[in-house]
Image (tube, rainbow, N blue to C red; front, side, top):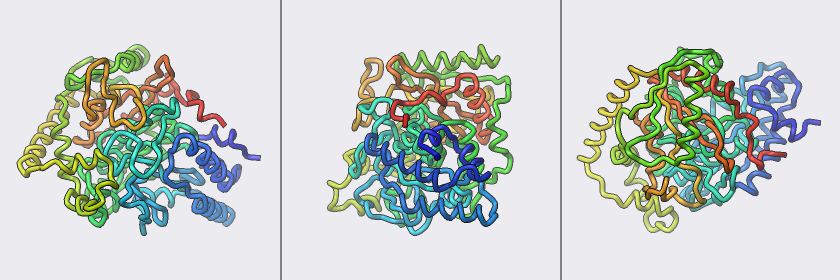
Length: 481
């Protein structure tokens, strides 16, 4: 009998190999994943919708195909949770908003199409900040997603539920989206791996780019979809399916230059690394600093890399970033959608919409963004990778939009992820890996950012760290069967 304990030991690659060889039935995998999803959701509120019938039907179709001799896909029978900002055909997609609480898309996002074609089983939709506006897991529609390491604390976000689903063993992999750190931030807070590839490698359509979905459309020039996983190898497996051009996304790029699974091999490479623990004069939690310092020491002492502690190539460009987000947002469409229903939306979103932007502000932000991209390109001429703490603080209390203070200093609600959004502005590949755990048992992430299009080196370096300092067996209590 295939038990939940058996299921919890498998990664995505193991599930695909087992189902392809006929050693495990996809229906057994789906049943265990759904069982786990129900149990986790009662405690941690990771899901907005658990797709029981659709998942079992998909598993039966895969089983029938295998019995008929059809080739198995690279994700054969692998359960995948999908963030509730990503469109899923026939499966409710709410964007964490009461404005869309009954919306059912008529088509899949490109990445969901590709996952289904590869044999993945979509088990449900995961909780988000409303329309992705915030690095948290609360919204006006669903209960707040809790951190599995301490349920009194935030899971981070906005890919909150996806990170929790992976951290607690509901599924080995999940989809998140990242417009300013929303894959990497919850990866850090949940003790798992998260990566956004270089801009254009993973095509986006129609979600984020459908003008018929005000509020849900937008962030076109900074948004990425990326995997959240327990291992680097599983992230590479996911990217091997997700990446590649699509004519429906004019920003998508050819990416036949990378063998993704080969890229995740932990081959030794001597690198020159920049380590920027501080960004823009903002505070950093002392425990986060100490744990990231220890992790960075591994690159020097164990791998023989040259590590230089240095200032970042530019400061905290939050005002420019906010203007870029606003320029990418269908503000008028969203205001019209909300009209006479202001009580439906979160206060944070209302505040965002109340600001009066000018064309000059948008123009200046565009010019400043070019300067930032150029500064980063010059910086990366000297270094192979940029290392930073993923997040400047530890997980904070539920239903807060930020920590309030870091190391005794008051900070605003955007000042705790200063190293995350720069790579959204530049389009560089960036990942968060577990650097270590605090004395109280909370995970801390280290961020690796590579040169534009050098995704392979980010994966390879993360895989080497994973071998040296493995995290796969470090699991929250709520992970256990």
